[in-house]
Image (cartoon, rainbow over the protein chains, first blue to last red):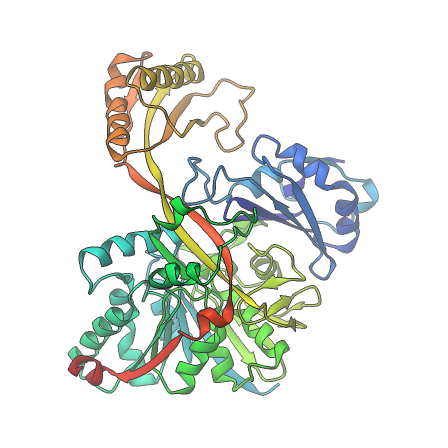
Length: 116
Length: 459
């Protein structure tokens, strides 16, 4: 089934200086494993290429069924000097969460799929 | 698990709404509350205020909050910790002492924490051989920045806060301490935890991190099923109920809106920390990769399993320097061809700057309603576009010139432009240089003073 990441996962982003960080939370272990396969740093970098000038580093946090992405050089200079409307990176998670995924049918069971 | 203390979040940022803190004080049964008033830009504003008047330089929020909450301190023994001392904790303490006197609370014990403000000793540190290498690039601090520092502060941790509270301070007025320290200090003191027990320090620090952003853990900024969060109009700020077996429960005051669940807590847990196994603070390095969150009741989430590692040998310092001025303005365009009009206007603006001889350090045009946040053009025709142009220039005069262009181009540019309001006044842009400094060099000058309101006013 084709759907957007935000329909099955929580995605929040924030800032630190000129970097942003994006956390993705899966609702269960199967989806966590699926996202771990799907959301490689290269996929994230390509989805956010218009925003992120630096690199993408991924951390796995299995105890929270979460993936954490550190995006360097992502805020146009950092909070106090950036000219961007979103100088704090708050919208980056939402933008990333509109990434489309092809979720295997077997994983659809027992998952609450939020409306698009 | 025997019940111990309750620590509440009172303020998430400079200018926050004090209503939230009042709910926690009234209905949250809290022993301690922490208040975050400082951001980098706030410190720059406070430095200007201090230059004009040596009795200023603290965040004015402290007056609002002290006015509201000192009665709870007096009647219920609530303790408060704030970083609103900014660049002048002593002046802030004096202001609080005056408020205490007004409510016949002369024996209010006020602690100040100083020593984070290192502007006065930069030259001396430099002469002793420090190069203040940039944390990201490794480059030594150039003379040009060194000679133009607006403010310079080192992040202190929770230990001086614990010290102040151990000495029975009712209100602790600090400057640049880390945000988690506002809560970790009370937890370490209230639980009588030892600073050499790294798991205890780490647990207190992580709980501080969970509380530091106010409503962001109780349903605010929730990226999950956000429409299901009830009553955001009377959102409750978080409270940590801390137990001595290294567990805690995150909850919120009775009768408030919002929600506390594993889903809301985990979002804040990873928020703005980089490596979850190495969340570095002045007091320890926190590892949350073994933390366990459990829903144990309505709006109650249990947390356990946080591990601590040795604190770093150096503290992080922020040096702020002037980095030009920012001017910005907006013009609203309607159909037909709203996006084309806005893009044309952005080009006209660039050429106009050229004619005026203004060479921007940076130029940003955004088409709001047309992919501004994505920084991508939309594949549809928007009904309207708000053009936002932001320009960074060298001088304030240039910035003022740029600001004046926006109203003129309502009439002089593409058709159907709407006046969207006067452009904001130009503002100074602040550059931030981060560096590490051997903690010994900082901590030897950190002082914790505890005095009554009466003693402060008579001094």
